[in-house]
Amino acid sequence: MKDLSYKKLSFAYIAYILLWAVLHVFVFHRLGFSWQIALVDSAINNGLLLTLSFAMAMSLKYFSPSKRNALMLIGWSITLAIASAWLSNFFLLQIFITDVDYVALLHKAFLIRFCVSFLIIEWVVLFSWILNRMRNRQEMDARKADVEKMLREAELEGLRQQLQPHFLFNSLNSISALAGSKPEEARRMIQQLSDFLRGTLKKDDKQMSSLQEELKHLQLYLDIEKVRFGHRLNTEIKADEESLALLIPPLLLQPLVENAIKFGLYDTIGDVTIQINSSVENKNLRITISNPFDVETAQPSKGTGFGLKSVQRRLHLLFFRNDLLKTEIKQNLYTTTVIIPQTI
Amino acid sequence: MIKTVIIDDEPLARSIVKEYLQDDKDIEVMQECGDGFEGVKAIMQHKPDIIFLDIQMPKITGFEMLELIDFPVSVIFTTAFDEYAIKAFEAHAIDYLLKPFSKDRFNKALKKWKEQHANAEPKQNTTALLENTHKQPEEQNRVVVKNGNNIKIIPVNDIHYLEAYDDYVKIFTKDGYSLKKKTMNYFEQSLNADQFVRVHRSYIVQVQQITKIEALEKDSHIALLKTGVKVPLSKTGYTKLKSVLGL
Image (cartoon, rainbow over all chains, first blue to last red; front, side, top):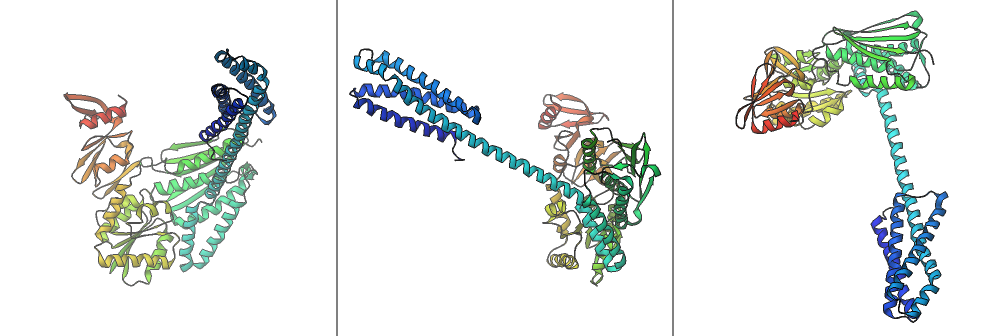
């Protein structure tokens, strides 16, 4: 049924009406009319039927009434049947005006002609209508499946984001290195990595965390990165006492700090200090994250854009504002500032 | 003696390679490097047989570092990034090791090198590797060059124009030119086609640098750059330039 194209459908309609046309000829011949009259009568009547029902089927392709309006279809079929019967009679009268028997029959048989026309048209219309509805249903199912698939992919992408495969694999590599020479440190790093991952997976996007909790989680991440990069990576976290209790969407800072580390470590040679400061500004939470970078060779397009964009998007979804995230370059310090409104 | 250099920005990542190499008495680790600059120097100095190379490193990537080396060396990539290594280098790098890798896997890579080394000259490796980068240029936003001992990173926006020069390409910026051992075709493909136009067999010009197009005689044009340099335009180059400029 799915593969039944409109072309095939048209052939089916034509075959269906041709069958009626042949029957029509024989019935008229049996009634005692000449083959000529029978043929012409059938041709005109069924030609009209074919044209009208075809037009109807095509228009149903573009406009399909709902179940509730299905009665409309019967109304249309009646109208078309009357038109078809009347037009047939009109033409046939013109042609065979001299044949008295036939003219009499034309008048007498009008109602029968109408009834048969109605049945034929109704059948085509109903069939088209049902088919169209089925087709629409199928399309809708397919679209729904597409949307679901997209949602699933987005969810997966989110998960992948959360797990940060590169971070994970590089950390595992460090653990592997430590396992040989310093098993105690390896064990500690496994502990840190586990705590970090657990914290990442547990976070519920809808609930806000306190800054204190978030910084604790961030510290786990920073500690792991410090093992990886050794003395090159230093961090300075300065949080005002009163800012610690303020609320922040969980893991919001994570991509920003990741960016800062990536930017800082891969864009400069030598030691890097990442600074994270928090304060209260107009009762809102204000956090800045800064990293050194090289103005000359910075590649802001490479990778960093995605993290910022996802944070921006999240802030927009949560607070309906686009002005909460700002970045600034001062000499060779790249600073990201986030404002978290506290009135919800 | 097989000489190696380990290049990775994470100290622990270097140490595990070193540890895995310890048991092999034929192999000597000449130097460990934390970035591509040190890597270039170490390779030039020690002329190693194999290098273990990370891809994401400070300032210049492992790939960019390889472009700066004229010396043929076999490369084993060690990286957590499967996205580049597998695709582009499966065929030509000796091996790529995805972090974290086991000792068995590591030994397999070494064995692979030894087998290849036994029956072929090692030269092929980097050349083949670099040819491969020629074939699959991604759009680049910077070019890494070496002038003597200085390594320079040129953002593509700073490039005025490029000129073919034997096996090299001269990259002109406000500070003069740098040489890069690549083909014009490579640059034509890897630079943004709306920004850089191959106006001549031997020239690629950054469109924003052009101030004027002058006709010398019938069918012969030159482009005048902001710096006053005149660049000849071939017939097809002229048409191409016009279409990019929307003329």
